[in-house]
Amino acid sequence: MKGKFPEHFESHIFASEEEEKRRRERSIAMGRGTEAFPDLGEHCEHEDCSQLDFLPFTCDGCNKVFCLEHRTYKGHDCPNAEQHSRIVVVCEDCSMSMDKMAGEEAAAILERHRSSGSCDPARKRKAKCPVKRCREVLTFSNTSTCHVCNLRTCLRHRYATDHGCKPLLRLPPAARNGMACRDKNSSLPHSPPSIRAY
Image (cartoon, rainbow, N blue to C red; front, side):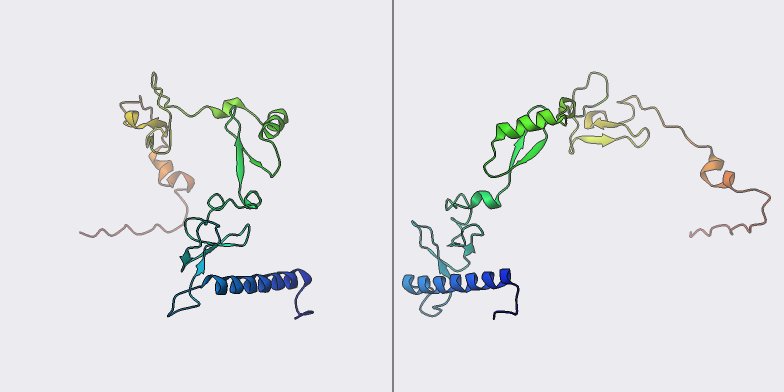
């Protein structure tokens, strides 16, 4: 097997072979499967469980096999949980989130963020309905955009009469159908009139 793969692949292959050998020995000792299917399923490696599971989960942190109940990092107190999980610190001033690396303190991350100049408290303010005396915060589910003036309002003020709609500048009809762009005396053939189905 040596010489066919790069060194890091070989070490991974040998580690997985040793791991598979360890699992086989453990399953023989624990009485794996049923009488009809002795090779089916694996026992949960949680110290208090040892349940036979036919669809076991392998933890990517500690490479042990667990049942549905103990499959999460928290469920089996995985010692390598921090290596694979993502922890985020949120700034209370501007609502920006920063990744927290293993062994890093949250206070140090927030202090670095505030001193970097990217912390802007004005970004925390949520968009509100622009109608006078309306304090409704505009979210994904309660926002409506007017088709006439393109104003974003809350659902209560979605109709043109409710938000004092002022239409946008309209183009004259000649500019809209393309006649203003083309010289009327040009020798280009005109398209035939469209046929309407009755």
